[in-house]
Image 1 (cartoon, rainbow, N blue to C red):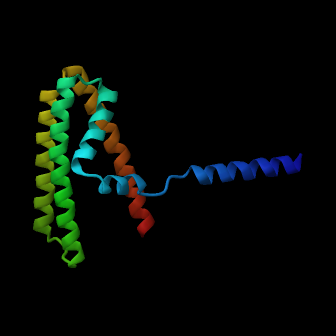
Image 2: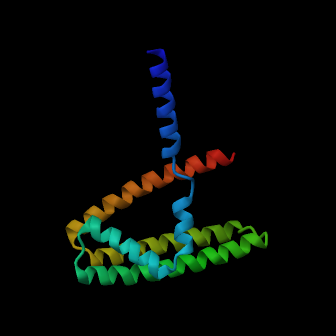
Image 3: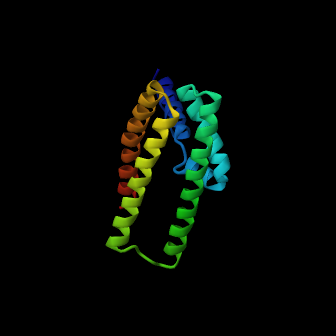
Length: 146
């Protein structure tokens, strides 16, 4: 009986160890994709979650593609500055955060135009859940670095 319990514990421990996702793997996959590919995948996920019509899918894909292009350009610009050893000043940080919030407001307005009331409410709920979940992940990553 004792051997069975030990074996069960080992099997459980190995199963849990294998179930852990490598950190940042999804993020790295997205970096390798083109903005068009990212937009296509994101549109399909949203179609499944929100039951989008063909017209909504087309509008959503173009919106997401433009956002993905902007995001990729910003990432490359930030990466170049980081490689040069440049640190953003407090004013630059403020400007970046202000720009990001303006972009979020504009995105929300566009989503309101594309989605119907029911879909928009569901999307907002998804965004709220995603935000809460994402903030926890960021705190977790920061605590690991320290």
